Length: 346
Ligand SMILES: NC(=O)c1ccc[n+]([C@@H]2O[C@H](COP(=O)([O-])OP(=O)(O)OC[C@H]3O[C@@H](n4cnc5c(N)ncnc54)[C@H](O)[C@@H]3O)[C@@H](O)[C@H]2O)c1
Image (cartoon, rainbow, N blue to C red; front, side):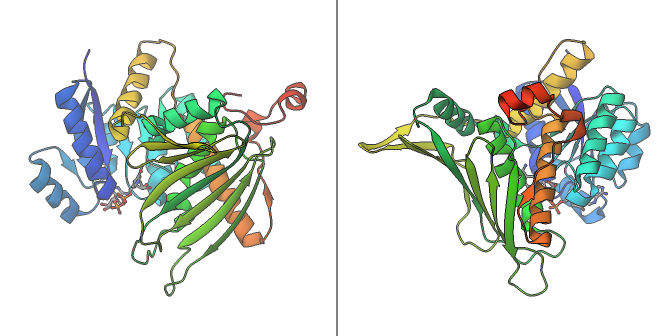
């Protein structure tokens, strides 16, 4: 099978990681290949040429829209550009993987989902932890009932960053914790409240505390911070019989019971590599008209954007915000009384 030709748009911190990973996967699996690299900064492209050697480089992503060799793109440009860039590639019938968050606003995210459907293209979101073996194992532990009744979740996404001018901590750090909650619980929250602060001069929010409440009584408490010295990517699930804590960085999972602590073995996965290969597999299967499940589908990305937006609304309006279901995903009345919540896949 021919490798999937992927172009990377945006070659900053994350884009360079993606380029390295595609080049590595091209060598080790032959299932993908790096078609071209786009960045609107000449100095970034110079750095790329030094690090990656002679590749096809462009300053304007629109150059790719008429290039017949470009069949798929991985969008790693800043969050504010995701909607514009992704919609142009979907309209020109390319398969698209967009870094998190899928877009800045729910209506934009939903429009991307609609464009992917209309143009029969794959739309994936960079929800990396869908491919984290630690999260997979934690989900298995929660589903096995070892924890007893799940009471609440605590997620801490922290680390020290200098003051950020055009970014806020909710948009930047919020997507992974929200997505992990959805992955673990198969549910979206019904209610959100959020408090946040920016401390260092005229900057945007640098720390946020979000509480997400689910109709089954579970609560998720999410701490996001660019002010804490320690880099944490940590999920704790507190249940009636045991507590599970996962370090998402090194994929270490600890189970605490009243009679002791045990370490649950996890073989760490290459999350970014798996994410890109899963995207390639979805594209291959769609092209061959084979049924497939995209575990990082654009609809999940749009659900997460809805929660980021609800968090900000809670902040600006100083109140708890009910999370409204998107019209396309409304649950029929009968099912709603039976299940009482919006579950993935509806
Ligand atoms: N999945 C993850 O864990 C993860 C981690 C870090 C960043 N990200 C995401 O990756 C994206 C990029 O983040 P970053 O930290 O690399 O930012 P960055 O600022 O380091 O890089 C962005 C790059 O995009 C370029 N750019 C800006 N506008 C462009 C345009 N219109 N066309 C082409 N290039 C353009 C900039 O010149 C810059 O080089 C963000 O969406 C971020 O949320 C994801």
